[in-house]
Image 1 (cartoon, rainbow, N blue to C red):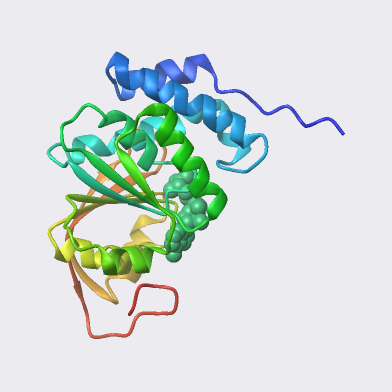
Image 2: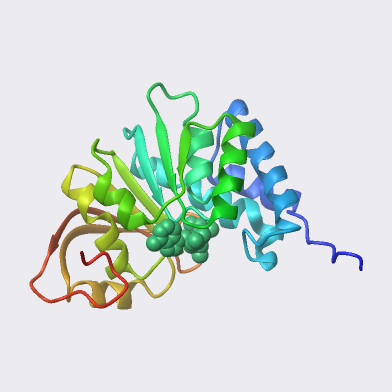
Length: 229
Ligand SMILES: C[S@@+](CC[C@H](N)C(=O)[O-])C[C@H]1O[C@@H](n2cnc3c(N)ncnc32)[C@H](O)[C@@H]1O
């Protein structure tokens, strides 16, 4: 049986992404190698929604790159639930030439963790894959990180539960969120007192980045599914 042909990223979209989030020639080379690898693996395993492939550069790459401006002095990152590598691999590619930079990519799915390792290998991205559960990772990481990231992982109240040990240890959190952010913030404040700022997404739509610099648990019990341990 012949495989269905996947839609390809459009060159106009790539140009638009690079206008939104300009990168050095070296970073562009790494990102192109990553996108090529992602397209090869996408043919056999679902790393991103196939419908988003034509706009892969704006929807996924530029979306990830915009986090760098919100963490311009950060060197160490923890990307929770990295999946196909957004934003973690993109950040690792962009930071490869920054001395001391490092991205921990946390992913419990074995196939995706294997993909992430291969992406770091072929791009020379500055990072390491942690094939484990986020709860284990955040509760056992001894050294602080500067910035914790996540995209399309969980509702905000759960993300805050995951990130709380890292933020308590000095990290800033930046979460890429969609249009439901106000509802998620309302829900989150039932369980957490947070210091936060909202930044509209540079890649358009109703998306935004939630920047969190303080997370304090309220007395109410967390619902199932958060890092309520
Ligand atoms: C919907 S995907 C999003 C992937 C990527 N961040 C993106 O935006 O394309 C969520 C990923 O988080 C991983 N994940 C979910 N819960 C996790 C957990 N508790 N520990 C580790 N990985 C987790 C899943 O395996 C999945 O690959």
